Amino acid sequence: MVWLIAGAVVPSLIVCWAAAFAVRKWGPRWGLVDRPGHRKIHAAPMPTGGGLAIWLGIVLPLAVGQLALWGLNGAAVPAIPVPEFIAPHVSGLLHQSGKLWTLLAGGTVLMLLGLADDRRGLDWRLRLGVQTVVAIGIVSLNDHWRMSLFVDMPWLTGALSVLWIVGLVNSFNMLDNMDGLSAGVAAIAAAMFAAMMLLIPRPDNHQPQLFVAGFLLVIVGSLVGFLWHNRPPARLFMGDAGSYLVGYLLAMATLSGTYAGGQVPKYAILGPLCVLAVPLYDTATVIFIRLRSGRSPFVGDKSHFSHRLVELGLSKPRAVLTIYLATATCGLGALLLHDVNARGAAVVGLMVACTLALVAILETVGRRRP
Image 1 (cartoon, rainbow, N blue to C red):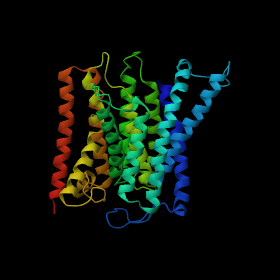
Image 2: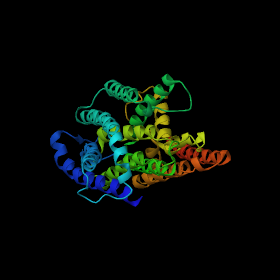
Image 3: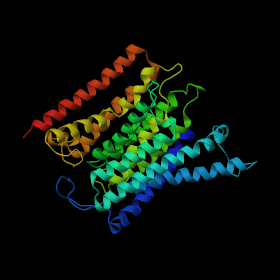
Image 4: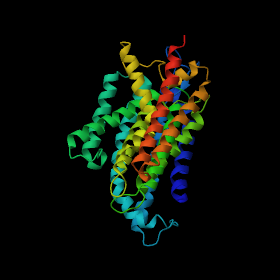
């Protein structure tokens, strides 16, 4: 297990960390600059396009891994030592690699869409339309990329899967409103999901879900490498390119995993909602506030939970840390769902509800302060 975690996290962390230096240097020359004003809380122009570094931190290590798999598959004696736990999975990894690169192709399209938006500013209808087309296309390609929900209604599970993908893409885009916030929450969520994949066995072979867990750990590594540049005070923003990519990859990873079935109770399927409860709550309340005020839900403002915490007197780093802790609290509850009875699951649900209630109280107080 240590080999899996280190082998997935460390290379992506190093690649993203190094690539982010290049983006910081060259990004302004490419027009990737976020300038202060209107709803912006930073005081000076900031290089953006950090999503390009995150993308490279994920794609480059996976591409190297793909080449290594091809070499291992064709070599009678591997040229490099192979960890014992990998050898039995080489053929399975090769079989899954086609799905991986199809999934990453969709993420690349959204990353490029975000990059164009970072440079020029695209109409929200175009952005939402492209996101929806990518989501429909990817869900249509493979039945494993749609929610199960234990119902035989493909049209419903397909529609909900598209909504889930587009929703998370925009959720992490909206969450990207303070230094380290969106990337940090995404890293926590990806780590929680990876732990779930290692703890919850597949119903068919009762083995840990190593492929999905490894993919999620690669995402964690890239996000941690980026956070070195994005931690307060940030020297680089992830931009729409990063938030679109991260939201999409988390959505696809959750759709790729198995949370219930066999000996695992059906209510364990609610795990992803627990892990992502705080960012989903923030997105839902922000959309509600904007619509109630007669404004477009796709035009940014300062109605987020993070902004309310700052209005209550917290510093921006402490506001971000508070949201980290709330996200981790809900996520830790999700780790128990597969291993508890119905009463235990109800306790987990109440714990998540109490956390969201606390968020709601803090947010409401912050909104009512003059």
